Every structure is written in structure tokens, then in C-alpha cells.
Length: 199
Image (tube, rainbow, N blue to C red; front, side, top):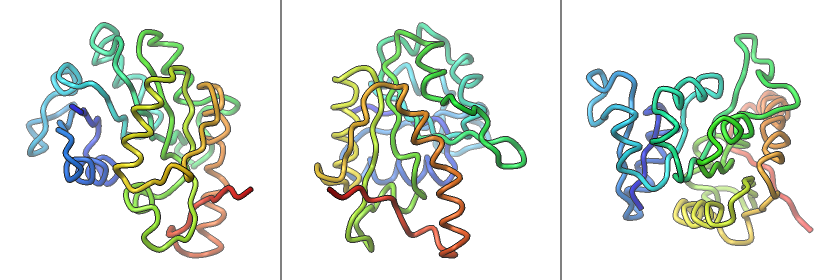
């Protein structure tokens, strides 16, 4: 696939490297491409992409997408892996989610939420040191979710480890898992862990 990644921090860079190694064509979009080697403008990156990965802080997502434009985003799959916090690390959108807000604002885009309940090291190598792991998927469009599940497989997630929670409203649940993530980190003093659903 032709994939645009908005953001070239740890998450965007790790996802881009793994997806490139799996044979995908990745373009990095930046607000200031002149300051980031290998980047183009966010709009240019998205215009050439079938799927867009949002890998920036959740509170910056809507403004970044506004800058790209509704017409550019139309019909594209938008994979949101972000988390949104206030400066004091409280949830920025209580009882709501970044993904739902993006879908409401850009109804022609096909928004999928995933990979937001874990550290980046687990995102791109889920079973390297964990015997079990679960990744959640939320979104309205079945074809878009199928495409994202294909990317998850390229990142190392097995079919059994992918749990489809349903529509984009279910992204509120996974985004609100953030306090549990940080509490677990404080207890274990490592981010090398993940939620595993067993049945």
C-alpha cells in the first residue's frame, strides 16, 4: 500500500520502518518538512496515499487534519493510533475519543482506531517477549478495518490477537485505557507489557 504517516517521532518512525520492511511505500508528512529529512508536507504525503496513519499527540490531530483538508482526506483510510492528554496527563476528551471526533468532522474519511493501548515497542513487535497480546480495532467501515487488520498482520499481530470492538464509538473505551496503562507502568517499571484478552 501507499501509506502516509503524519508524525515522525518514535511511533511514526517505528511504524514506518516496519511497514517499509514489509513492502509498503511510506511517505512521512510534516508541518515543517524542511526540518525533517525524508519528509514532505502533510498534504503532499496524504495526496499520494491510500491509508493515512496519525502518529502525533491526540490533541493535535484535528488541527493537523484541518490543515490537510477535507477533500484531500475524502475516502482515505485514516488509522488513528494517538492518545490525547492534557498537560497534567488527564484525559483530554472524557467520555469521547479522538477517533470519533475525527470521523464526525471528516465523514468521508474512513477512520479506524487501533494500536493505542500499548507502547510503541509492542506495536511493531507484539510477540517478541510476550506470550499473548491483544490489539483492538474500532471503526465504521468494514473494508477500512480489513485493510488495517492486514497492516497489523505485517506488524506481527496474529489473526487471533486482533479483536474488532465494532464501530468508532468503541474507541472511547480503548482511549480511556490510558490511566490503566500508566498505572501498570508505574507498578512494573517497564512498558514491555500489553493487555491480553483470553476466553
